[in-house]
Image: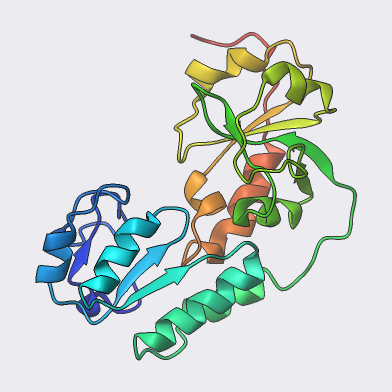
Length: 231
């Protein structure tokens, strides 16, 4: 963490860095607003996908300043992080410079068409204008649902498969996809399945320093869902 001494509270889902010892204020969808206000923070950091607009409005109505991030691309995420840190009175950290360097090169090769679910029961996938979708395109992978009207549409697997899938990408966040539980769903598709780090795919922060290398390696090691395996 860039400045752990500045943090006075966090949600129950804030797992990085390990051992963060601050007041926990429940989850992103059901925050204890009274507890947040009682902490008397100078600034609350929120995200437009994770935090509900009514909760942000309630905090602002209580006189609490709220900074809401909403990046849809990797460059936008890097710019947002720099602006957010500056709003906290911090200089540009070394990890942000390293992350910008890691993602400076663009990708102009052929794209693999991928199904990238983010949830099961019901199946939901990366749609249009998402940070994770932009990050994957910079690794040569395009979501087959990128032209959908919704950013995270509910999908039908038969329709998805008919769109011409070359690859299935299964992250372990926000839904914890695993080979033992989820590989069989794609056994008849005839395409490889890559299990990837959801943190490196969907988080924007210090994890961006290693995300390009980590995800590229995981995509390279995609498995055949129809191959025999230990159960």
